[in-house]
Each structure stands twice: as structure tokens, then as C-alpha cells.
Length: 307
Ligand SMILES: Nc1nc2c(ncn2[C@@H]2O[C@H](COP(=O)(O)OP(=O)(O)OP(=O)(O)O)[C@@H](O)[C@H]2O)c(=O)[nH]1
Ligand SMILES: [Mg+2]
Ligand SMILES: [Zn+2]
Figure: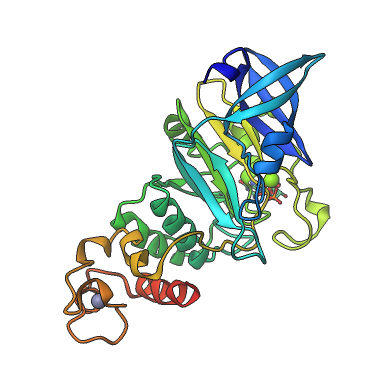
């Protein structure tokens, strides 16, 4: 692409209302979109550029620039824009792993949401590691038995606490050298975790006086990526209230439930089986035999109805 060779290259770390903060060689450039890219952004994409995108830009001086090209993404994590089933919102591009975050308590974890994140990550070809934070508030035995379901499937789980620093060494180890995305409901403690991992970030978190956790407005209003001192990048996202599945077809859903995947195709009706009441269903049999947790199967059935 000779026409763009003279342009600089950088990575989008943050965006807000038509402004994109691009990092390049230790500098931050405040970029707008070229009119060509602007026109290209069509109705099926909420924004042609996502945090994490590698872009070429024209340096127009004084810390400003114009993005002229988006380089091919090696991965992307998306959802449908809430309320708009056919519009894609890329939460982050070029990421290595998804980190669903839940609080041990306050707010009480809802594992159905976890299944959504895990399915979306599997569909995107990305590994997930589950984070349970606020372990200082953990007070019931059901947490361990709930987590055991996911541990058995093979998802790594990090039990951490932003206020005591519990579990952070192990977590930092998995963050090192990778680009990771924190996703989870408002108030679960994502930003507090970022601050605990890298205190000099000094990000704003929800004050206790701002009302009951999990209710009310979000504290983090912008999706933003941060460079970690020990190497790697971490994306903080605003609390997500609704997480729909993007571009996943009903027939492939079971293959994104990692423990169901080995049974897909083994049903009497083959790939057309919806694993509901069909005779000779390998997945239902695996539920009966205790190989697939009934809770995860119910979660599958619920998600399937949406697709
Ligand atoms: N007890 C306890 N409270 C915590 C911990 N981590 C965070 N909190 C509290 O939980 C509340 C929400 O924390 P945030 O870090 O703002 O949550 P968030 O997930 O970033 O929320 P949004 O930005 O709205 O998505 C704050 O009042 C924190 O002080 C923890 O490890 N233990
Ligand atoms: Mg936050
Ligand atoms: Zn079946």
C-alpha cells in the first residue's frame, strides 16, 4: 500500500465522540477519522474503530492527526449494540484474552452473564480467565461450588481482592505480555482492580456514597486501554448491563460451550439436533450421565432461544 506508507502507525488506546487517542513511539496523538473512513463506516458497525486497533494516521502536528487506515485485526470481541440487534459494537480489537469479572458479593454474582461472556469469547477464538474479586466480602459456601463448575470445564479462576491485594501476583502473571479485557457489570470492581494492579493509574472508582453498588450510574464512562509496567495491556470497560451474542448461529452455540463441544455432531439427528427433546441427543445424555452440568445446559437452552 504505497499511498499510506508515509503515514505513521499506532494503536488506539481510547476513544470518545469522534476523538481517538493513538499511542505511537511514546507519544499520544489525538486523532479524527479521515472522511473516507468516515464514509466507510456503515450501518452495521457502531464505530469502524475499536480500542486496540492498529491504525495508520497522518500526523497533522501539535499532537493531532487523522486516521487513514485500520490494519487487519487479529481478533475482536464484540456484542450487538444494545437495542440494535444488527449493529456490531467491537468492544476491543487485537486482544489475547477475556477476563470476566464478578464480585464475590455486592453485587451478587449472576453466572448466566458469565456464560454469555464465555460463549462470546469462544466464538471469537479467545481464551477466558475468570476473576472473582472482593474476596474480603465472600461469605457463603455456594461461591466455591458454583466456581467448581467452571474449574471442571477448564477455565482458570483468579480469586482476588483489590483492597488486600490477595491473588494479584498470580493475576499479574497471566496479564504479563498480553492484551486482556476486563468485562463485567457496573460496580463489580474492575477499575479498583486496575488501580490495585497499577496504583499510579489513580483511576476514579465508585465512592461508597454513590449509592448501592450495581445500581445507578456507571463510574467508568469510557472504554480505555492501559500499558502495564510489567509488560502487557489491560482494557477497562464501563459496566455492561446487557450482553447480547453477536453473529453466533443457533446451530453453532453448543460448540461454544466448551464441555459440550466434544458431543456436537454425535446426536442421532447430527448437526441439526438442537439438543432439546430430540431422541438420541448426545448432549442430553451427557447431562444425564453427569458429564455436563445441568446448570450450564439450562444456560445453553436460554441463550439458544435468543438466537
Ligand atoms: N470490599 C471491597 N470493595 C471493593 C473491592 N474492589 C472494589 N470495591 C468497591 O466496589 C465499588 C465499585 O468499584 P469500581 O472499581 O468502581 O467498579 P467498576 O466495576 O469499575 O464499575 P463501573 O466502572 O461502573 O463499571 C467501589 O465502592 C469500590 O470501593 C474489594 O476488593 N473489596
Ligand atoms: Mg470502572
Ligand atoms: Zn443433540
